[in-house]
Image 1 (cartoon, rainbow, N blue to C red):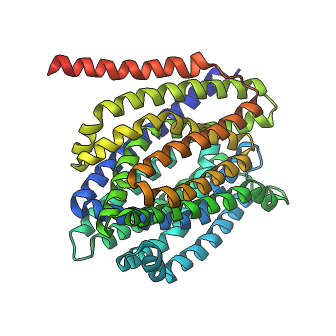
Image 2: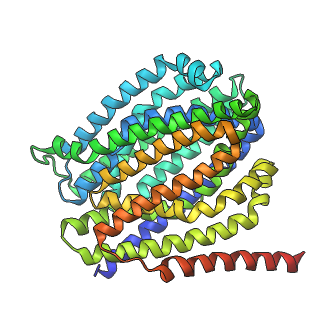
Length: 458
């Protein structure tokens, strides 16, 4: 059993991380609503396409780096040398990625995004990659020492700076997309300065050892290498997938403006709303990585089993409750945030996938703590391959309806593989009534109670 103090610390950190994530996502939703009002559905679609390309650069220089720092520090092998090596590795990759993105922006904009206006925003985003890479390393240290306040404050600072700078720049003569990307890059620089100062203070305070042994780079590559390769391949497919959706919609019969607008409604409006409640899940999942890594290092299968069972039960309960609420409030959310009836309709259709989506996120993080990240990456990569193939075949035939169906098929496939692997490794048996029946009934109850309240009030 974990000590009372350790449990208390875990829940406090989870609350801090969840609270910060909620503020971030709420402000993010509000900002998306503001952006949508300024640039419209088509602009939101182009905004998402640009970031789908930029995400590939982020993946190339951050995947597995933060996890390596977290794992090594949690297992007692963290040191100044270890973190510096991680930083050097991440920065080298980030400068390469930034250079490729900057100098090939024109080609990417015309050939893949289909709009030359995307070239300048891509060039503006490129210098932010080194800041993002360095922050990923340093945040890994704070998660390892169970300090969530510093990373959360850093993310709040970054979000606040991005919103403030972007809002100010939108009122200048700069093109709207250029203004938004410049605000994003400035906020990443501000977040790096903050996290570097905090790391210097805490590393000195906690007496971080200087030398972590002669096999530091080998350990980093063992943890980060598979994730980096797998995540980059998956991110490449993710970027290809996002670029293929508008192209497929055009082949289905839509013009460029309509295709990008439909894409913008799903990816720029609906999916961020579905992801918003996942703040709670992501917060707990991030904190579980060092806890489970430590339990594994100390050979404590009972602790791991307890964590896994609680994760399944609580994540699915939360997911089904969220589904009930999203279905009920779908139209209100669509109008309030985006002034879009279509967004509300699509949100109601996609909402039932939330429990599986949230559980998949939780399971992936637990697998990382159990040193099963290679399996997780294989599952994710095969899922991405499947999505690209399905998008290429079915969106030109059935349009946006096909994409919504593909989201369901993909989430169910990925979650099934990840859950199967976790149950095998942890030797935990499925409890259908406790994990599925009760949470599903709870979600249905929430929906009917909300319907009853609305009927009484109206």
